[in-house]
Image (cartoon, rainbow, N blue to C red; front, side, top):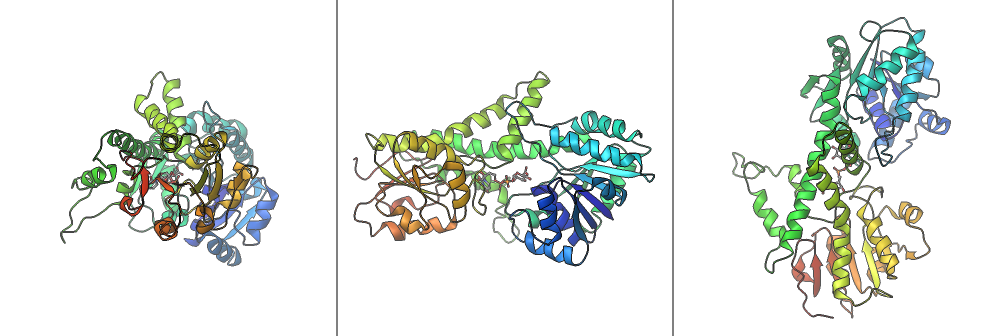
Length: 454
Ligand code: UGA
């Protein structure tokens, strides 16, 4: 099938490369000529595991190319995927990029005789496809939805860092559409994905499934954090043990025939920490809250999910403040800056709130992340923060070591700390260390015990 993809951001480029790999003929369209140039040279415009190899292979074998010319790409394809950004502007999602894409596609459809299907992949609140995008397409094309072109909604469920894997190994394919002709064509796009459950529905439901999925995962995280904060009020309770007990419920963690536990990945969202970040959860939850409110419904649970998440990073600051009279001049090693391991992305990372707060309290900060250093320098500035190249350099002479991102290498922290003359205070924001290994250890969901008060 011939596919044009409008927007070569994270979703567009991953979808393009993966569909090319599955045998589709892909034309990526972007207004940014530099990006287009890069793709045509087989270079990925973003970093994502295995993406570079996939783009290079499919550009060389002729199944993938890029252009700034939307008219040619619409005329030369059977379906178009809208994969432009929908940033949250503080009040609601901003639909400007969607508007431009829909206008351009509509104008291009004006001269096209054959039936065409437009698929919305960008995350948009319910009703956007039918009530916002459809009229723009009809107005700009002079054609009728249903008879001249079809309009569908096909959300993505890709995790940053594992997007190529997730696209190639989907757990579900959700296809919304205005009619059967549309959903049949979208389903054809995925015919090479054998054995995957395909759910056919209407556009509004498809839009809502995306939000409901992200809201549930974010709710699990805030739930775990709230339980952690209650656990920390009572000596002898550790949230790690509590959640371990919760995870043994066979409804969450089924016992297999072999007698072993299934240990679904879902359980990793039921762990206490210093909060979620990234380009999706915070934005999507705020967007659906604002959508609900615009319809007269106050979604109290989701508002609390955001509130808990916004305050969670400051719990770590509180732990330090309870320990030291003043933070002025205290050397703090911050381990982990990315919003999650496996990425160099700092967007909405709890590290930003924590470091800004420490800077305002005049602590001396040494911030380390295995791969997010350059992004961190750009976002946090280099005036008041040192960015050492290794964990060993970061923890040297530290009074406090604070863990923010669950990178595997931080599990080795004890091997760096045990030889230090002056034992630092460990603040474990991800509860990834063995608390008994350290002299002074504090963590989320743990009553603040110390071997010695300072
Ligand atoms: C998330 C969803 O997981 C994807 O299904 C969805 O497609 C994507 O948003 C999106 O809307 O585009 P992503 O933002 O890449 O993907 O991140 P996750 O890996 O889910 O992590 C989000 C947050 O949850 C992070 O802050 C992370 O620290 C936290 N998390 C993640 C956990 O607490 N536990 C985990 O096991 C994984």
